[in-house]
Length: 281
Image 1 (cartoon, rainbow, N blue to C red):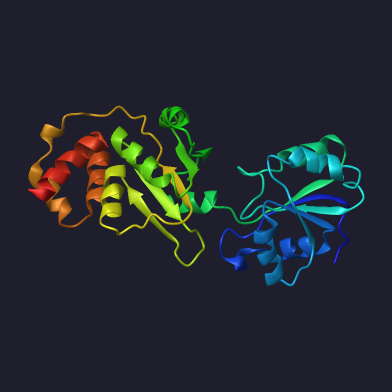
Image 2: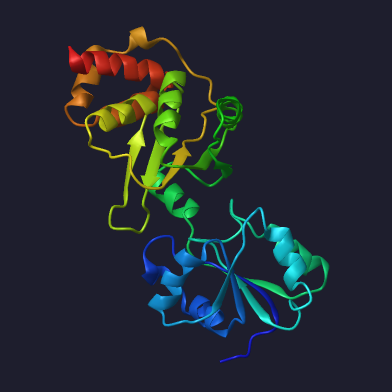
């Protein structure tokens, strides 16, 4: 085992399944003198799982500067580890002030990469994600929410963001109200026993929620499909009803919308309305 340099190690931890931690992450935590974490009572469970006993120091947005001030004289002389409650530190989590202090003062900093919820959610969405925009957390206040939605609607690439359990229903309702011509994928409890995800237009997902085929419990990541910049045709009247009905016997409503849109370039919302009407008639 190579002896660790003194300094700061930004270590990723599992987002659910504790088996997802890397050997390097375990060894780094074992060699740490002090571990900075969001919630010591949460992180102790991870350390206990792997038989690690370390001093845990809570680091949050409100105390980060005081933590830096308290430990700045020791950062060059000891091995410090920064972890979050789950996943990769610094992604919508505290720690950047500590990291910046170390970097601007010549203190060694490195990262031990690992699990995060963003990439798995993009993978499960089935959307083209060669480019994507991470929008952080869905806001708390109504005013901020409207600004947030306006911003993400204007982005042409796939958009991914976090939503807390008490805001997920509000988010879905607003997305449905907007009747945006973009599908979304909602992923929850990634790597955990109750992991599940649903993809479709917001109104389709609302229907599944009402039917209780998708339960709104857990932690959520939403992915919005890229906005199509192709010039769209709006002449839905030219589409043969029989052809749509034939497709509906073989494919789901969502798939039919995708197929017809790709073949005709008619707006998905227009195709969806017509296909839904034909399906229900």
